[in-house]
Length: 290
Image (cartoon, rainbow, N blue to C red; front, side, top):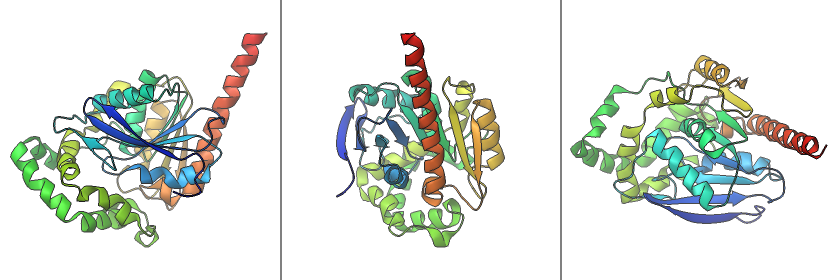
């Protein structure tokens, strides 16, 4: 994209496929902010926030099998596999002690990966929580014949399904869905192999896995929720913030895509988090020198 400072798109190999990541911003303004999207989304979710905070260093990630990232057929998408894969990729890129920013299921991956990466802090937006119910219908996707039937349908109806989700389930006001959003989220599923991954991604998804990580991660935490979120109950997000020892923000009139619906507010909370982390690191340096 012309005019985006420091943009660099890389493909990073892993044992289960390759992850496409995008660097944005200068290298010398504090710790990198690694952004993780939701279950079936891609890195476009975080582009508005990165555009708003151009003085910060961002790494926008397409998770395996989503966006531009390609997955092997035998890839796994349970929470532990996603966190381990992220850690491998960040080590390959030479990133140490990042700030992790996650949206929806990306917030769950951020929590699971925080200790493994010794993360400096967490920004969790519309976060999946341990008490979120997993739809019973997803159990059928455990069977390969079912997945082989579902994948072509998801590919064929990708635009209509994406439009329905954005208008009816994601944005608080369907009239405010950004121009081009349907294309940004639907286009990756036109690829036959990538569409074939989606039933397995959905099958492996289980919010209850987060129970293993239900304790403060060690660095500062910010949790941002939408008051009109139809997918994540705001009270559940508030309780999750308390479990993790984090500060909680609730945006009125906001649904399940706060990075796009409330870009300025999310950017302000994220900037406050990174500023706090940078100030703490400076204080540690001063103390070490005395």
